[in-house]
Each structure stands twice: as C-alpha cells, then as structure tokens.
Length: 40
Image (cartoon, rainbow, N blue to C red; front, side, top):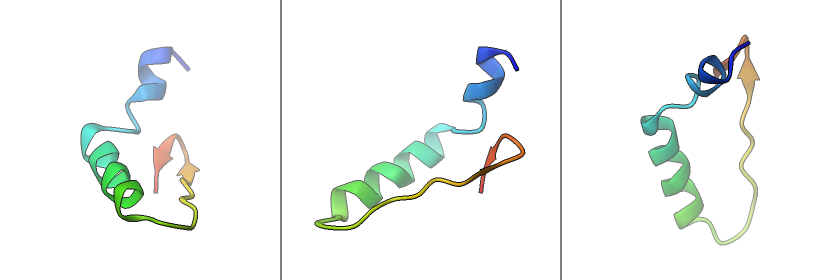
C-alpha cells in the first residue's frame, strides 16, 4: 500500500472528532479501530 493510500482512511472530519474527544477528556482512553484500511 502506498503512503498516500494509507492516509486516506483518516480524513479531517475524523481528526476533528478525535480532537474534540481528547479536549473533553480528563481520564480514559481512545481506541481507534481500523478494518480493511478504514477507520470504523
């Protein structure tokens, strides 16, 4: 898989959601699940 193709499964919408989750957290963890090259 090319480097460009690897980056496609995580778009700016996903990154915005992840940033909001992390900003609001005081404790805990975030788990990203990748299946078939896509974030689910």
